[in-house]
Image (cartoon, rainbow, N blue to C red):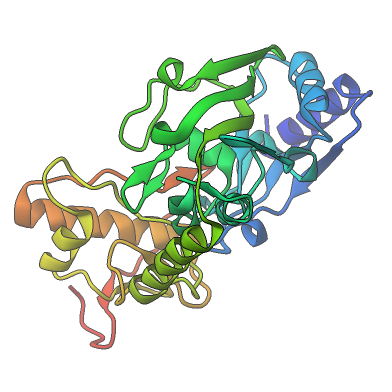
Length: 325
């Protein structure tokens, strides 16, 4: 069956199933403008539920064989040029509440990490400052155990509320989520809706200074004012990804408008009109060069999702030289 016919069938089926939806359901919804790289094709269907109850209602009534993908702030994702099959869920304002408690915050999954750090500082709660150095939202941070500047979600999470793929709800503790380096054991298909983060009372001025230091460090060391994502590759067990990439001669390596950052070579950039295929091919070229030099095969930290398109014919070039590597 042609893709367009299949997509239309999904659209008709899902619209009928979600007749009582209070949120928004859109067909053939552009995703590229929502991603930090500004690349990627559309979602067959995009669901923006009104709140956790609306999300549970939707998941309960969706066809069980419908592919479902959850996107947060899209700061660590490459959406491939062909778009995403089935349904994409993106949480909005109904998942952005922040409640201050004496020893922590209860925050919605759509809250940006930076906003949570600043809110904690305003409330005189210490321990969440590292979130100021992580692009993205709390839901994604829980799902991947995001971390930076000496701490991570596993260190501060008391519990996370989730809606499961069948529309059920659960509250999962930190140990139940089985956190590891940049990963969790979030149940397949589950969507994080909010989380409780531990913190301790402290002087707000001291906390704000710590956040300012983190923001300055990030500004000086990372390409924060570019079309980019988070770290491209995970750090291997021994060593740092950026050091391996640099040693393999990949700093500044480019493919069309996709480029390895000169400022921090574990970041890729879209310097103009790069496609998702350009970014992914560039990343694979970096992995191959690092493996050839060191024997270490870097693991992608950025998620690459969706339907691929045919690869570009031209190979990468070293930026500024015009030479084929």
